[in-house]
Length: 159
Image 1 (cartoon, rainbow, N blue to C red):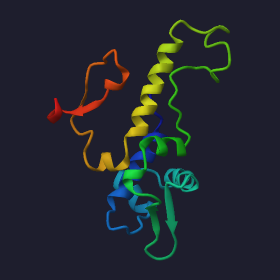
Image 2 (cartoon, rainbow, N blue to C red):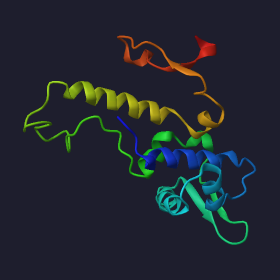
Image 3 (cartoon, rainbow, N blue to C red):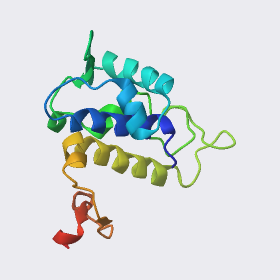
């Protein structure tokens, strides 16, 4: 699976807003300069993020965007969903349709579906605060066990 720039840029931008820890609004032009991203593209993303209650806009001099909720209360999954970034591992339109390839369910369909579910859970559990606090710095994956609850990301310090 390859994430589009939409999801990656939205997460990067939200982390920049959260980094403004004193609660002052952060202008999109500042985010654009800090991250070297298109201002027009950021405007499109923040319109969606605002509609989904991730950020709130502040007008006037010194205006910009602030988080609507705390960084601890915003999951990476929330951000991805707000900008319509799907986490799909199959080409199926919906799970109710009968076919993946050639009008039938492929033999690996459930494997990719399970992987997508793991990714969704991981993104739902990861918060903006986790990114800010370096939870994933130097992270490595613990080998996949038979028990799905045991799969987690740990830092090198925890190994």
